[in-house]
Image (cartoon, rainbow, N blue to C red; front, top):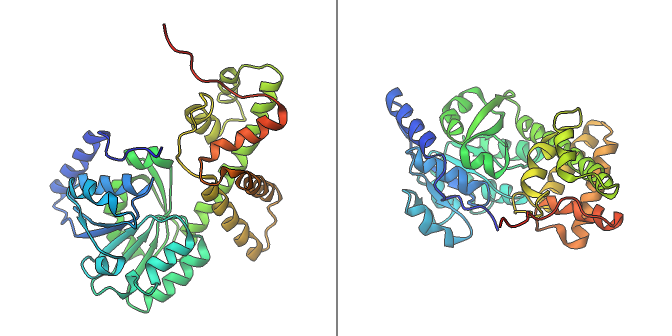
Length: 329
């Protein structure tokens, strides 16, 4: 099940953020937030607790009561929100959904009040460039701000955020970004640069993860203890995000919590490969990773966390990596 964004965590840091904004005399502007999924719910909660009292919207209206209880208001549609607030943050699952919410028939582009849109989704550079051009025609500035760090980073505000957009727009929204993230990187004014950096990062993550699955399954087949393998790798040159975080938290105990679906990871890798093709850059290893993810999706792994892909290697090898913890007596 997805993690609960309303569990009591990071309260001390949230209070410190609010107090800092107060000391600095910063005016907390009315903002909006669209997309209350696995990532967005945590980010929107942090903005509520930091004093922003955002208007929020999600296609799943069952989320309304929980957010109203912590100070948010509910907007009936993206356009209705854009009629009320000057800045809207979006966290959405696919490029098509992002484009529809930003520039569709009932999108933010038609709002009377909105001036800045912050896209924390992984949209890809082409959609971002296209949306930025259309929004600019309505005097709305788009800030690419895709995030990395997973649901745990969204929950505790430690996300890395890769930003591109006009300097003045970045300065305007930077206070919001500092509530949801710890590491902000400004990549320049050109639309899509933040998005490109994000899909490069996620593609590297995907290839390293799948390579780690292969090696760990090999070790398991040969009889090496799963946790010992991780201990060795994580003080050696093979360490990466999957061996340090993903596999210890989600795989070795066979719990496989839903944090990021296989479908979404495949989408990000494909966005990167599409841009590489446009730029004339070969990415053979990354394309092999995309093919493996596509195979896993064809076997039913699309809607589940991508950690489950290790089960495909295990089935071929006739072994299992890790085990459920034994109950304490």
